[in-house]
Image 1: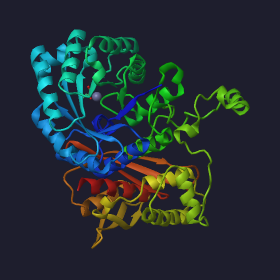
Image 2 (image 1 turned 60 degrees about the vertical axis):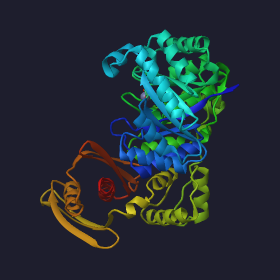
Image 3 (image 1 turned 45 degrees about the horizontal axis):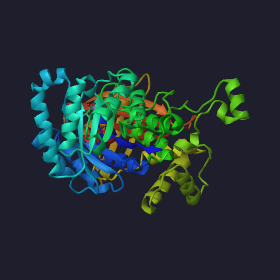
Image 4 (image 1 turned 180 degrees about the horizontal axis):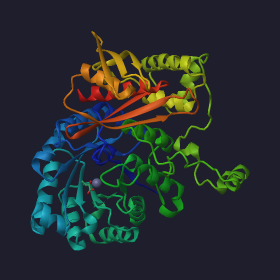
Length: 500
Ligand code: KIV
Ligand code: ZN
């Protein structure tokens, strides 16, 4: 059985999607989760694109030890130099350089001839190779490229030192049959193809990204590029969890395995959704709430008689918490720590102390605390970054249908207390206006506000997610509390802290 490498690009292609940008702390958290998931390579960003991306690639390169860390770079010297500078502290760095090879991209975007593109591939792959040995070359829009020209491009890249050649379906245009043929064609016609891994990178514009990637594996691809939850430009990229579980569940078809620890899938997916303030569609394959739920009586009966009647994989295999234990204010630290471990969360001593204090505070307000609450608390752990920003000290809101709503909010920056009062259209509007008076941020507006409950019951934890537009960026803030006004304030303060 061959082993297919998993190249995760959540932090680059995923993060490029609208409303999916992440703060540095969040990127590091996701990178560590990807390392635990045991991806072979993670693309940490596009170092030349901004100071923020450069810092993210550099920090992740210096932090992650057990996966290769890659930076994207156009096939130009400056990009490659930035990528190298950001990556040079990594245990296993990779420069991922690309140029388009399709007629439409070469003519209208690059304004380059085929010969010029081939020459650029040769020069830039060699240039990247002078810094780092592991070089990936991508032929952007490969699936709409002329085959014979693509063959030459791939050959040139490998000859210049590429260790991986990536065949992207940049616009999600291809079909599984075409992808299979294309990979076979390259395997059979590129003389030096044995010297490099063949990779694919499929977008999901026609809903084919996973199917196309798996067809490529069947044809001989040895690396698949994908993102957690299928995030990515437009309709997204191939979803890592679907690729990995597809290969795992149908080994007889693909004859391939990965090194991914599948029991980390659920947790990693949840983390990425949480960081972005998103929730999966109910029926999302592998990680949706309904993915392992059996509602119809006939199905329930079948599963009870023999699980495999309606289940082709087990919830345990993706690390989905099964044993729903309930905790309360009398629960001890050890029991909580053990449950967190079973759910896949290893907290160090200091983190556990902080977590337990927050657990106790919650247990005072909420009678029974279940796995979903525990996970929400872990997901909302106070970040060090917030120590630099403002925290909620206290608030009062007076609201009703015959008075003018007003809010008094007091925040602290750790040194001083700041109190402001404001009136508004309702409790949230008034409280947010009071916060705006305290936190002096560049011009911004509230684009979206959403609230949902984490678990059932009147005392359920409420999670608020806000999206704040500031210049060209959309910043996500999240807050969690049994009091929805407090959750709203926490979410807004979290977002405003990120802005400032
Ligand atoms: O979709 C694409 O072609 C890409 C490349 C840069 C690999 O993201
Ligand atoms: Zn892409």
